[in-house]
Image (cartoon, rainbow, N blue to C red; front, side):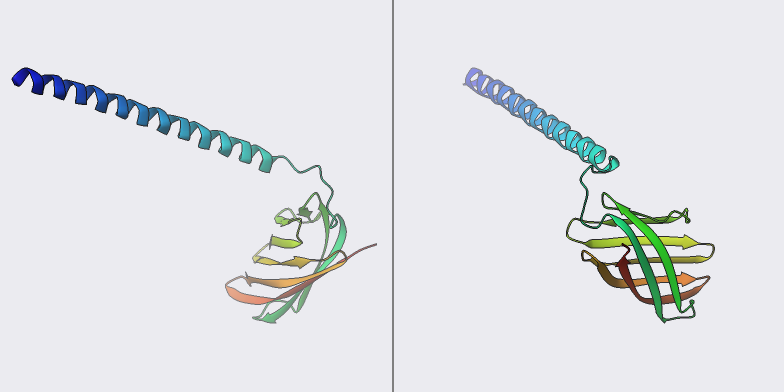
Length: 148
C-alpha cells in the first residue's frame, strides 16, 4: 500500500508540476502579448496619423469667461493637422480632435491655466472650459470657427 501511495503522490506531484509549468507558460505568453500590444499601441500613438481629417486647417478659438475673475474673452488662432491641435505662438498648448469631432485642449500662459473639451463640426465648434488665473478659479465656454 505504501508503494501505491508513493507512486500516486509522485504522479500527482508530476502532474501538478506539469500543470504549474503550463500555467506559467500561459502567463508568460499573456505577458508577452500584453507587452507587445502596449508597445504597438504606444508606437501608434507616438506617430502622427497620415490621414487628413475634415477638421484640418486654421481655426479661431474664442474662450469666454462666465464665472471667476479671468479676462472676459481670449482668442487663439490654432491649426489642426491629422487630429493634432497646435497654437504656433504658445509653447504650452496641447490639443487633439478625434475623427468624430470630439476635441480636448489645454493651455498655460504665465499664471493662467485652462483646459476644455467639446465638439467640432466641419466649420464650427463649441464646448466648455475651466481653469485658473493665479489662485482664482474661472470657467466658461469656447467657440470655434474654421478659417477659409
